[in-house]
Image (tube, rainbow, N blue to C red; front, side, top):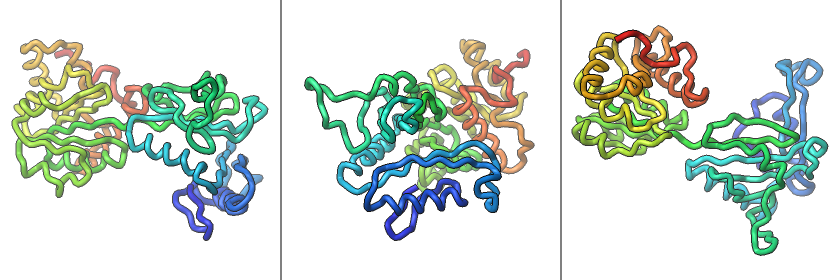
Length: 331
């Protein structure tokens, strides 16, 4: 949350009296005073009139920006976030547990390299090398490639900013459009492929990273697929679905999903197995795609698909309510 000198703000800590108290303290140190750590016990003894009885403790770092050096850290953080490759902030908030001065903040890039720290960039050197973060900070630094959750260990908070995943949608029809436009808000970079140029336009997908029109098979051969790619097949027909799955099923994507009835999926799987696609590769396909929420309309189908994509991304490849193998029935 940013707090401006006139009392206005951008962003939120969740509202209520905690937010108001943090803002009050932020305004108090904006012109003078050091950064500070404040904690609140969220129970009936604090802020009962606002209903803060969910329990637990909320800890906030209040950090004034008064100089160019102060702003440099956040400029570097902004640049790292814009790269989309992932990063992690380590914030020392408990001096007793960590044995380190508080508060202090370190920014690591996706490869675990220290790129900024409190007070600006890494200008201080020792023996010709940048001074690194304390070993105790590095000891529990998570690998952002494994998509870790925020954590706190030994008085140090680790706040990962995860790499944005790619979402390749094959089929720009009504379901593809609804999923694509919703996925952008869920931190997916969307590419849409369709053989009909009128279905892959900026009017239909205003925030997509890439729109590709052409023969489905030939186009998919040219599309980069990586271990951070999610592939969703929602074309207008059986033949296009089968062709798309043939070109995507064994490309190393993090996730491949296909819409359709179980009967259609069985027919496609049988065809692809006859063409040499292994049962193991087919077994990793999420089909029929989407968490079962009784979807009937296009927006509901899109919600079920987006929920599955988010669950798969955030839960280590596990989608609650689905079998470990996407296709577990005998074929």
